[in-house]
Image (cartoon, rainbow, N blue to C red; front, top):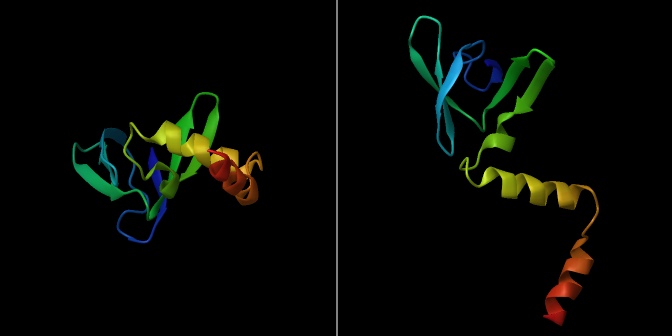
Length: 95
């Protein structure tokens, strides 16, 4: 994992393995053994795997790890147009 960009210039370019995660931070162990805490909301991360590379906006990750699947799923439902605010308001009045 590499910090591709950050509002803190000292964090841009930090590379290593994620060893811990909180709601707002990733702890990254660098090759020299140091652990650097990187705020998620202010950074963009590059992840490399055998089948390709992904660049992720840290704001997408800025939730408790156990809440992330629910929040991402709800965001995609709204983005896909499966539920508009008008329909949501009507559903609420029927309940």
